[in-house]
Structure formats: C-alpha cells, structure tokens
Length: 212
Ligand SMILES: C[S@@+](CC[C@H](N)C(=O)[O-])C[C@H]1O[C@@H](n2cnc3c(N)ncnc32)[C@H](O)[C@@H]1O
Image (cartoon, rainbow, N blue to C red; front, top):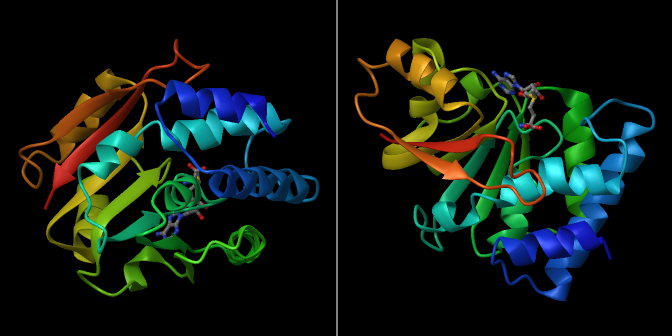
C-alpha cells in the first residue's frame, strides 16, 4: 500500500475504504506502466504520482461534496491521464462521471485503467468537448485544460445544466484574477477556494468555482 497516499488521505480527512485505496493504487500502477512507453503524466515514481496527481485531485473533495447530490452527473473535461476525474470518481462512488478526452491514445489508457480498477461509475467519452451534448452535466471539473477565455467559458457552459457549477483546479491567485478579468462579462461572480495538497504545502493551489 502506498504510504504517501494513505497519509495524505488522512491529512485531508478522507475516510476511504480498503476497496477505494486498492482502486487508487491500481490507477497509480496503470499510469506508471503506461508512462514506460507513452508520456502520459509527469511522475517518475508512485509517490510523485500519488502526491502531484492523486492527492492534488482529492484535495478538493470537501468542496466538491458541497456542490453535488448523489444523482449529480460530473464531467472531467480534458481528462488526459484521468485527473482529477478518476480520483474523484473513487471518492464519490454514487456519482456518475464522464471523462471527456479528444486524444485516442489517452482514451485507450482511460478505458483500460477504469476496467482494471473495476470503477463502475465512470464512462470515457473520446471526443472533442465541442461535440459533447449540451446541458448534460451538473458539475464540470478540469485541471490544466485551457486558461479561461470567452471561447472556453462558452464551451464549458454549453455542456453544463442551468444552475450547475464549474470547478477549475488552478495555481496562482494572481494568474486566476487576470484570467477572470478577461471573462468578466460572462462570469461576473466566482469563488476562489484555497487548497492544501498534502506534502505540497508550499505550492499555491486553488479551486475556482463558477455557477452557470
Ligand atoms: C494538459 S492535459 C491535462 C490532463 C489532465 N486534466 C491533468 O490535469 O493531468 C489537457 C488535456 O485536455 C485535452 N483537450 C484539450 N482540448 C480539448 C478539447 N477541446 N476536447 C477534449 N479534450 C481536450 C488534451 O488532449 C489533453 O489530454
């Protein structure tokens, strides 16, 4: 069992079951395996992956919990290697998650990881986000997808139900405020929640929450 992952979840106050820990461990091993032949996610070993990607995704769990109900449908847009969507899907087994990713090779990885993890609440949508059905998600999460600009906000709002939320994993507040100034006409109001990622306490991480 990955010690960093267990300690990090404890620091975040997450009470995961053995099955959930096993799923996360299977995910970490699947990424490391795929990384040998294809540069999927930046991490040299299991600890780095656990901290920089899995715990980074899980750091927002208490805030995500306040935005959803058990029947809420969640989209991870530009899922890449599966973060934050896969760790969140493990943490919220009652919710259905759709991983939207346009690159075929990454989709093949996502499908295979989800199968190995026996993760029943996740679907992979190998598609351009522009082609996704309109107003299907109650919440969209994304990390390192695109900076906010008018085109991206329009795209993200298009897939979101009215009253639904966007939750963007971002870094520096200064950069966030500059991005949000660009889209002020479309997004007059937003919330920035500071996140603490275990073992990365000196890295600035924020969750930007926007309601449609
Ligand atoms: C920098 S990666 C980030 C991956 C992951 N979210 C993470 O944080 O590790 C951005 C991903 O978004 C995908 N992407 C970019 N634009 C997209 C679009 N319009 N529709 C679907 N996927 C897109 C890319 O193929 C890439 O896998």
